[in-house]
Length: 610
Image 1 (cartoon, rainbow, N blue to C red):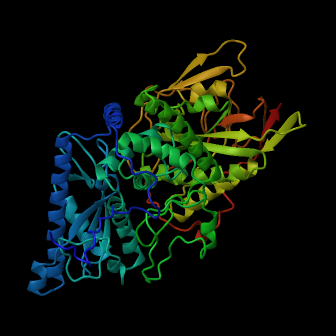
Image 2: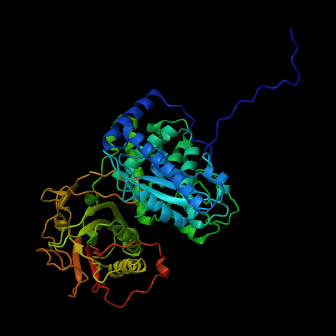
Image 3: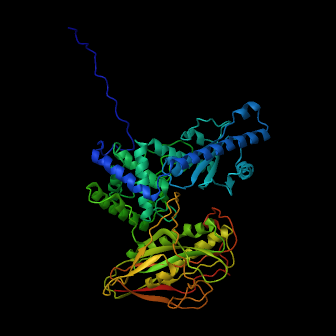
C-alpha cells in the first residue's frame, strides 16, 4: 500500500469567468419551461420583422466585402501619389469595420449599416471626402452613396479614422487603447462606435442569449415610444448596455428569463446611480471621461449609462426628468406583464402591444416643421431641439411632466398648389394639482418663445435660415385632432363619460430604423386639404394660429380633476433650399436679427378649472 505524499494538494478548481463590476445575482441554469418560453419569444418576434433572412444577410456581407476591397485599392492609390516606398504600398492595408446594430447582430430587415473606414497615417481626412468620394461615385452599385441591389436597398453610413500607424494590419483590434495615442479628437470620436460595440460583445457571457434579448427589448421600446436618443429617451447603444448588464447579472439565463430580469432590475434601479459594464480605466491620454467627482456637469445626469470603452462617456445625457419618469413607469409595466408571462397567464404578444398615447392625455399641442424640399437634415434641426422645449416646460412651476412622443406624423396640407413636406410631433403635459384654487392660469409664452429663439439661432449658425422661415405656436383642442391626425380612429364613449372621446391609433411601425433617432410612422390616409396653416384661413372652429399679425390672447378653459393634458404645439418651420447642418455651438452663434424673424407676439395661456 503506497504511503501518502506529504506535500500533495488537491488540484485547484477553475473559477468561472467573472463579468461586470459586481458578482452575479444568480447562476441558476435554465429549466425546460425557460427554453419553451424562449422559443415562444422567438415566434412572437417574427411577425415584426426583427430577423433578417439569410439571403439578405449574405448580400450585406458581399457588399461590405466589395467596400473593403475598394478601400484597400483607394489607399494604395493615395500611397502611390504620395511616393511611398513600394515595400510599404504592397502591405499598406486599410479596413472597413462595422458597429451599431449590425455589428451587435441585432439589425432588422432593411436597416442601415454603420461602418468605419480605418486608414494609415499618411491618408488625410480630406482625401476621404474627395478622392474616396469620387471613387464611390464611379461604382455602379452606389447611387447617391446608397448601396442598392435588385431586391433590396439599404444605406451604409461611413465614418473615417486615421491611425498613427504606417500600415493597417488585417488582424487589427480596435479595442487596444494604445491606438488612441497621437490621434486628433475627430478620429477618436469616429473610433468610439466600434470600440464600444466590440467591448459590449466581449463583456457578455453568452452572445446569442444577449442578441435575442436585445431584439426583444428594442422592439418593446419602439412599440412603447421610448426609443429615441435625440428626444431624451434611450438610443440603440444605451438599450444594448442595459441588456448587457442584465446578462452579466444572470450569466446562465436564456432570453426569456433575461427579458423578465431586465424589467426586474431596472424598474428597481436607484437612479442616478450609473450603469457600468466594467470598471473605468485611466489611460493617461488626457481625454475627458465621465466622472462626476471631477466634472460638475456630470453630477446632473439623471440616468447615466456609461460606455465601456475609453474615453468613457454617458450615452444618456439627453435624458430629462420627464423622459426618465416615463421610462421607469414603462419598466414597471413591463415587469407586470412579464410576471404574467412567466406564470403562463399571458403571451409574449401582450408585451409588444402598442399603448395609445392619446388616451393618456386629454388635450394636445403639436410640434410641426414644414419645408419645400424633403431633407432629413431639416427635420433633424427641429427634432433635435424639441427636448429643449420639453426642458422649458419641465421648469414651469405648474407642470410636473412633459412627455414627447417619439413617433412623428405627416403634417396636414395647407391647400396651396406649392408642394410642401411637413412632420409633426406630439407633446403630452401633466399639470400639478393645485389645492384651494378653483381656476389656474398657466402662461407658456416664455417656455415656447425661448425654444423658438433657439431654433432660429441654430438655423442662422448652420446657414439654413431663410426670410420666410416661420415657427408658429397653436393651441388645439382634442375634438379637433382629426383635422391634424387623420390616421386616428375616433370612437365615442358613453355620453356620461367625462373623457368625451377615445382615440385608437394605428400602431404600425417602421422597424427598419435602427439608429438612435426617433421613429417615423407613415399615415395610411391622406391629410384633409382644408387644414389651415400659415398663410391660409383656419378651418371653422380652429383657434387662430399664434405668431401672425393679429394680436389676441389664447386662453382656453379646461376641466379636469387631474390636470392631465396633451398639448399639440404647432411649430411651423418653413425652409427653402437644401443646406447642410453644422455642429456649431449655439453659444457661439450670431445673435438673432431684429427683423424679419417672426416671433410669438401674443401670450399663450391655459386656464385650468377644477
